[in-house]
Image 1: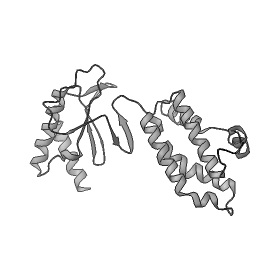
Image 2: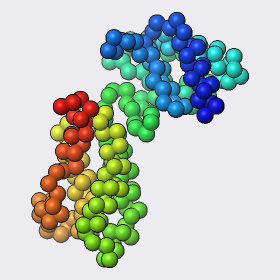
Image 3: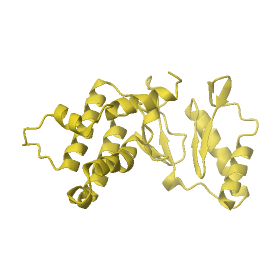
Image 4: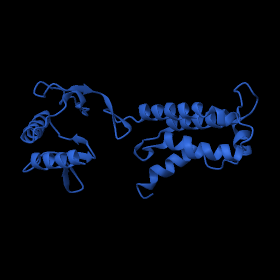
Length: 220
């Protein structure tokens, strides 16, 4: 808590009289803060250097310093005009990083994050193997566990995704993997996806739920 108070004070002091950032909704955005995670946003390397210097000066005033080993620089620039990093302090330049639990890519692609979420959800599904094998637990209870424990892992941050046709197919395939794993149906068994979904009473596919969550924040 004390660190957060210090961090908030440092940011506010560093941003005094600062005019940089990018326009959004009539305001200029130059930082994103949540707990002890801070993202600085500028439209040029010159501004980034100045903002980092301001932050470092204010931090030193309170006996703190920027942990450069944990500081990452991501360049989001299709024009290629921002690639000169000679004036930026020695920090790692990355193409992607994890922020608030989600993988952010400099090309705006959501595919790596979707694949990462699928892998995390599958890992959880495998760890609960003893539950799926337990004959004393009904299929109805098991399906509710999948929806309550597995799908939320996958759908974390779905509101920020861009889901195209290919990603939707990947999500549908992941969903079927979960249902077959729960029911212990091997891929060699002659069971169609349609028959499995019908027997489970699945009316809304996981990909459709993702779209619903995605559209909910846009008011559509």
